[in-house]
Image (cartoon, rainbow, N blue to C red; front, side):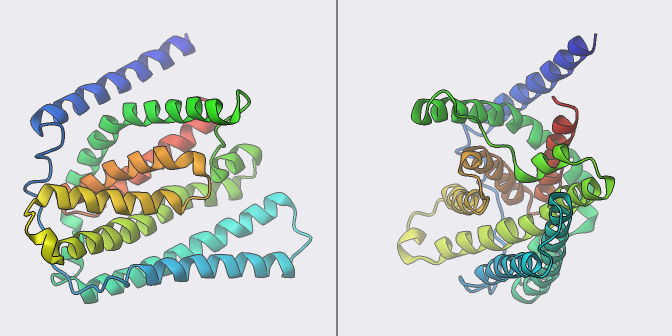
Length: 288
């Protein structure tokens, strides 16, 4: 009975996703016209600015985790995981606040121009869910292809490594650890990563392309937007430590980046990211 119910729900999700994706492909001429009406986000942001919070975050997390390991060498594995997640969450939250101030100072319309307009949250939640449904079948195919290529290259023993946080949440049953992992994955990481990679990097790449003299002659707003999405998505994927996850993360990031360019709202990619992480946690906990 449970298996039948699971397959029915899964089938409905995939069918809905395929229909949504097919409808989008037809309406946008396979994406060629998808971002023809996407508005620019006027800003005074120098090209190097997004790298500042990225490097501060990477440096702070590395230094703090290394220092903790030296100061507290006798921690158990579960305690170490708890401390590491607290460090990550605290550092990400602090850098998120810095990003907000940077956006307020460099976007001509302030936080509204950055995409933080609370009046759009209700609309972004529904649209984000639909966008995630549309890309879900593609993510599944990319995941399966990655596994098959991995087996061809590294042999039949190749297995996709589980995300470190998902592995922790299944390995340890301590409620405080599971709570901090869930809060980090569902709230902190989506806020931080979307503000950084979509809000700053994607905007910077698009603005940079728009200012190039030879690119101005192209006058193709859709191509410019897609290139900015692709570059920021590649960067988003490679900062995650497990290379086998990069193809799936890249495709997910492309969909998230598209939602930002299409809507101009950062809440839409944040909600998509949060929903994806929530679904991943639920599937791992219930062995789906």
